Structure formats: structure tokens, C-alpha cells
Image 1 (cartoon, each protein chain N blue to C red):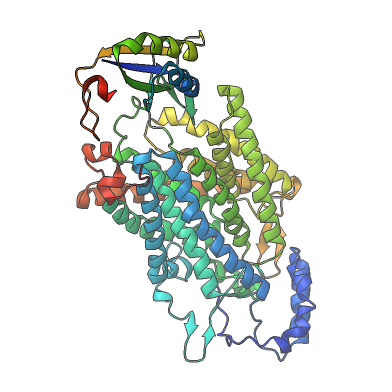
Image 2: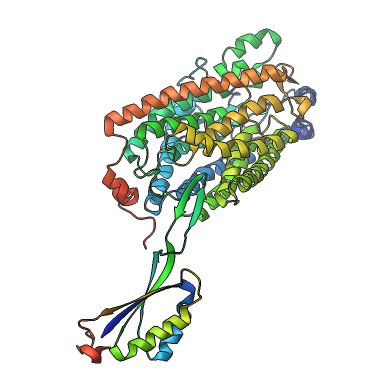
Length: 112
Length: 492
């Protein structure tokens, strides 16, 4: 089982959700985050006090998937989220040791 | 202010009705006309009692009082609050709200008496302690205060209330320099001391005089003048409080900023406004309320109030434009904070000038205030190197000083100004010349500056000795809302 964590542009959320649904991914967790990579921030000016704002708002999507779905999901996210400009984001794939469904107590692939 | 004999509360209008025909003439700014009308009125109503307060004046002044209250709560609270970080919003609201209430109460206990009764040239007396004498329950009568016209009384209670809001907002202004790190108890101790030893004497020095009706003949003039405040006797012009309110508070704020010290993280961390929406709401309400502050300082619903009203409107709009465009030019983008700050700068600068300059003066003062105060919060602020967090000095002190000096220039009839009363017996206006008036204004500014700086320094020191000025660094990091007040402004 894998956990994929995707950092994407906020306005791409709907496209990515749509694409993941079509790929067969049924559940997601979404958080609002901020961060930066190579994309530059901006400066803000308040009465002569200049602030360099490096952090940019992004959306983080997490989805727990069975191994066989990962390749499809990655392709779906990339297709939906790519604009080919700096700041498109990144996807991290990590190994999931255990998953449990709280309502039923199911574990492993049955819980995904 | 002069006080007429107690007039029965149930104003007997019918016997005075013939006088109403002459009141339109009295409402014109021309003092000569007012004098003729007053003489005619006296002849017509020889058997009538002393004049009753004009209902229009009373209505206007009560309204103005409410408008100036609005300037403190919520206008100033929101203007300042929006400029601090989320974690300190509630502390700003609380400080303004409570200081407003505190000073209002102290005003009614002893403040009004010390500022606006006869004493010496620096302090009044205690004849109006707890507002004693303003209302007589035995016969239901009210005492009267004078205005700037002869034979035109104002209910003294109305004047008390109006001036209370001035004292309170002046004290609240100072908070802007010391937000996000000042201890609440230190605020309260400081305010009591500074109000008593800086606001009251400066208000007395600048504004207290016996009133037009005390000037009955030329022989009495010197004696009556000698009862007035020190700065009033100099002939200084301050319509609504450029010195008494803005320079007074602005300098005190700067002293506070130095003594309290910089906020943790100043210069390294982002100490950004959390809601310019709130700041804009605050600035807009300030503009609205300031019509009461400036036009209400005419003390009558007359031409002077009309002039003050329009000057306030125009100068502010000019300052919004000049700050906005200057910032656009210099920094590349016009900002909402700049526009809002420009408005406040214009309002501050026109405060001493409101009924003392003409339309040309309003244009000039507004446009200049925008750029002068823009420099005050940028270049000058960098020179001074104190953490005057919300720019009380850069806007209020600098705007007040500019406005006070420009008043000396634009009061000149040659520049469209109304001049000022030179002879309170005949109520004739004149102008001593730009250089002469400018010198008088400069002296008034200088006295105010030094007096308030000294008192503020001592007051902050005493508060420091008693309770300490700052919260701990940990409390400052967590935010004053939680640590000082156990509440959050925002529950998310």
C-alpha cells in the first residue's frame, strides 16, 4: 500500500479530484498549505515596511492507494495539475505500513 | 467658558419668538452683522430674560458628541486593530474601549473642571468637580457655557460631553505606538497620569477663555484676557485640536515607543496588518465622525461649522489622493493602507485649520498632509528608529504640526481665510500677518511638544516602576489576546 502526497496549485484542485475519481481513487484528504520551491514569492508593502513573502499558497492532497493503482493515479494528477510553469508542484510516494477502517476494523487492502 | 445665569429648563420660547427673525442674521459669519442683530434683539426684547440656547445649536452639538464618540469606538479601535496581527486584535479593541471609558469618567469627575474653569493660565479650578453646578435639581435649571458668538449660550452639559469625547480619543490615540507588547495595567496607570498632567493643562492653555460675553467694554479686555489659557492669550489658532489632541498624543506615543521598546522580532519577522478590511472600515468611520470633531468645534450650527465641515471633507479627500499617488510613484503600487492613512493624515492636518482657513487652505493642507505624513511613516520613521508600531508620531504629530503651521498661513484673508477675532468687544476680525501668526503657531507647537514629552516620559516611568511596561517575551509571542485577556478575537 502506498500513500501519495501531492502538492498542487490551489486552482487545480477540482481538475485533480475529477481526474483521480476517473482513475478509480475514491477517497482523498485535502489541506491548505504554503510553501516554495523554485517559484518566487512576492513583496508586500505596508506604510514603507517591505515584507518579502516567500511562501505561496498550495493545496496538499493525500490519498492511500493499493500498489496497483499508484501508476494510474500519478498519471492522472500530473495530467490534471500540470501547467508547465514553475510552481506546478510535486508528488511524494511513501510506503504505507498499515491501514485500518475505523467503522469496521478492516485492515490492509480491504481498508482502502 | 462664560456661564449665564441659570435659565429655567422649560425654555420659554413664545416670548422670545420675535428674536427668531433676527437669528438668520446671527448665523452669518460676519461679526459686524451679528453685533447689529444682537443690539437690535436687545432693544426689541428688553423685558425678555437672558437668551435660551438655540435648539439647532443644541441638536448639532449633541449629534457632534455622538459622532466623536464613534471616532473612538469603534472607528479608532478597528483602524488600529486591523493593523496588528490576529493574535493581538482583541487587545487593541480592549485597550481603546476601556481607556475611552476611563477617561470619560475622569473627565466628569475632575477633568472638565481642571480644563474649562477659571484658574491660572495653565490649570483651571475645581468649581465643577463632579460637574457640580451644571444642573440644579432644586429648580430644574441648567448652567450655560459660552460659544464664539455673543449672546449665544450652549447648555454647559452639552459642552462637557462634547469635550469628554475629545479627551478620551486623545488618550486612545497614544495606544497605537505601544500595541502588541504593552501591559494592560501599565496602560491604565499611564493614561490617568498623562490625561491629568498633559491633556488637561494643554486643553486649558489652548482653549480656555472667558467667552465673548465677558468682553463688555474695552477697559475690561486686558483683565479678561488674563484669565484665559497661556497659549490662547498668545493668539494661537487651533480650531479642533491640532495641538491639544494630535501633537499631544503623537509625541506621547513616540516617547512610549522609545521607553517600551521594539516588538520582539521587529526588523526580522513579518509584523503585518491582519485585516486591512477592518482598517478601511475604521478609517471611513473616522472620516464620518470627524465631521463632529471639526465642525462641532464651531460650537454652533452656523457658517463656521459649515466651513469647518467642507474643509474637513475636502482636505481629507485631497490627502487620500496625494498619499495614494505619491506612493504609486515612489513604490510602484497604490495601496489601501496608503489611501486610508492619507485620509487620516488629511483629517489630522485640517483639525487645527477647519474653521480657520478657507477652501484654498483646505486644498493646500490636504494635498500637503498626504505627502508630508507619507514621509513621516517612511523616511522620517527610519531616521527615528523607534518601533512606533502604528505610526502615531508620523501621522498625528507630523500632521498636527504641519496643520498647525499651515493654519497660520492660510488663515490669512489674502489666501481665502477668515482671519480671527482680534477685538472681542466689537467682535471684529483681523489678521496679524502671515509671519506673525506663523510665529505664534510655532510657539504653540513648541510648548505643546515639550510639555507632553516631559509628562509622557515621567508617566511611563511611573507606570514602569509600579507594574512594568511590557508583557513577558513568551506572552508577547503567544499574543496579548490570550495572555492578557483570556480571549481570542477570532475563534478559528
